[in-house]
Structure formats: structure tokens, C-alpha cells
Amino acid sequence: MIPPFNLSGVLPPYIGSSPADRAGLSPYDASLLEIADAFGTTHQRARILRGLVDLRDRLRQIGVSGGYQWCAGSFCEDIETTQGRSPVDIDVVTFFVRPAHVRDDAAWRAFVAANAALFDASRTKAAFLCDAYFVDASSALTSMISQVTYWHGLFGHQRSSHLWKGILRVPLVSNDTDALALLASRWP
Image (cartoon, rainbow, N blue to C red; front, side, top):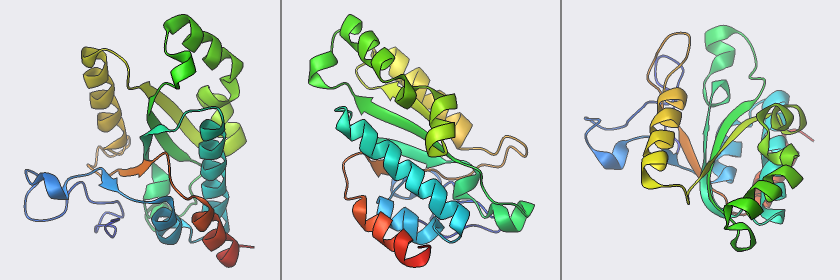
């Protein structure tokens, strides 16, 4: 469920009467179809979403399918109204489980090197319009806590204003073709 923008033009950091109610706390679970429906409102936004679908498809093709992604940034804001511009990309952090064939560290390093175009943020931004980062869910607990804290702090606030805002959570395994079909019907 994607809540509507609040008066500041961002997803609210929580819905309901209290941020202590976990059921209403960001990140909000959403399908890619829901994201396409809510945010695929301009040609530029559709372009960004197609890039996200392509990145997700490429990740699944190489076996990165266990986990989910947090989506945020100006793409998940009413940036057109608040700043008079279109988003240029979508911020994405992927929390994933290593594929079975690359569980040991040496195999993992070789796998990342062989697929650098998918794991390097500057390259994903250029190729997929995704400012993409990755968190290995097989990391030690202290590392995972540190990573989740970092990314939630970064994605959960506007950098310029420090405004608290919401994040979307999308499973890696989903039917992204429905989202593409919706975008094609709106922005052929």
C-alpha cells in the first residue's frame, strides 16, 4: 500500500496516529505495479521505472532473486510540484541473499567483478536510471544492523531539508511485466 503524499509532497514516514505503531511505519510494502500506477505519471517517470524493471530483471537473470528493494529519492516525491522539476533517477538499495553458487567470499568477489555493471552505482545510474546500492543479507548481524540504519537514515530524510519521509519496499521476485504493460498503455 502506497500512502498519498503529505502536505510537504513526500510519502509520510508513518500513517496513523503514532510512529510507534509498527503496522503504519515506513517502509511501505508495494508491488512494482502499484509503484508504476502511483508514480508512472510522466514520460520521464515511466523511463525511470522501465530502467528499474530492467535492472531487476538483470539481477534475477544472474540469480539475485532472494530479498527486496527499498525505493526512495525524489522519484518517490511530488518533486514536480515542490521543486518544479522531474526526477532524474530512483534511489534503490537491494537487500539480497547471495545465490547458492556464490556463497563463499572468493566466489562472491569474482561474481561481483563479472557483473560490475549491475553492482556499481555510477554504472547503474547511467544504464538503468537507478542510483543502486546493495546490502548482502548474509553479512554478520552487526554489519546488517549498521547497513539498515545507514540506508534508512539516508533514504528516510531529504538531504537538503532533513524532512522525515517514507520509503517503499518491493520484493525482488514479482511480476514486473504488469508494471511494464501499464506504463506502455500510458506512455507508448
